[in-house]
Image (cartoon, rainbow, N blue to C red; front, top):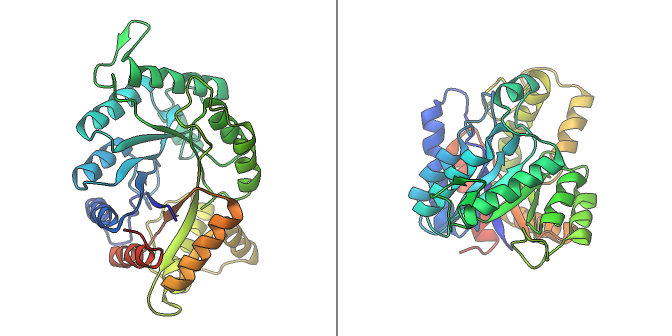
Length: 329
C-alpha cells in the first residue's frame, strides 16, 4: 500500500509557531526513515491552527533534513501567486534537491474571502488555470516563454499534480494528463464522481501529460495508538478543530483532546461525522485494515494520511505505528 503524508504544520494551544515548525520537521525526518512515499505541505492562510502559509520555505527545510522522501506541495493555491514566482521557487528547490521535489496545485484560495482578495495574483478560472500550468511546465522544461527566462527552472521538469474536491479539478487533471489528488479528508462528497471522471477522461497524449496511466491519491484522516480507545480520545482534537472552523473560521489553535468545552449540537456532530468520514482511527491493526478497505473501495492508487494531535509525540508515534502495521520501509 502506497502511503504518503499531508502536513499543515498544526499549532497547538500553548505552543509557539517556532515549536510547531520544529515538530513538523522532526516528523519529516521520521517519515523519511519509515518509508512513506511523499510528504506534502498544504498552503493555508489566516488561521491560528496551522502554520503552513509559506509552503515553499517549509518544503525546502524538510528536504534539507531528509534524504529519500519526495517533498512537495499539497498544494500551492495558484490563484494566490504569480506563476512566474512559483516556477522560480520550485525550480530553485528542484535544483537544490534533484529528483525529490514536486508541485501540487489547487484553485481554491485556502482561506476566507477577505484574505483571498488580499492574496490574489492570478485567475482561478479553469482555462486560465490550465494555461498557467502549461506556462510553468514550459519554464520547467526550456526555461523560456515570451522573452522571460527562468534559468533556475530550466531543465528541472518538476513533476506536477492537480488537487481538487470536485469533478472540475478531476476534469482538468485528466485533460492535462497529470496525476490527481482528491481532498477527501475534509471534503468527501464528490470523491466517487471525481475519480470516475478523471479515469474516464484521462488523456495520456496531451502535450502536458507526465504519466501514461491515470494516478489518483486521496486524503484520509489517520490516528493510531497502542491502547484501545486512546486514538479515538486523541482524535477529538481533530473534531474540535473542524468545529472551530465552522464556528469561528479557524481562529483557535489545536485544542487538547477530551470532552468539548461548549455544548455541541446534533447538526454540528453530523457535520463533523460527514466531513471526517474518510478516516482510520484506532489501534494499529484497526487502522491498517481500514486503510486497505478505503483503498479497495475507492480504487485509489495512494492514500495521503493526515494526522492532527495536540501533543506532537502522539503524532510521531502514530506515524510509526501506521508504518509498521502497513508494512512500510
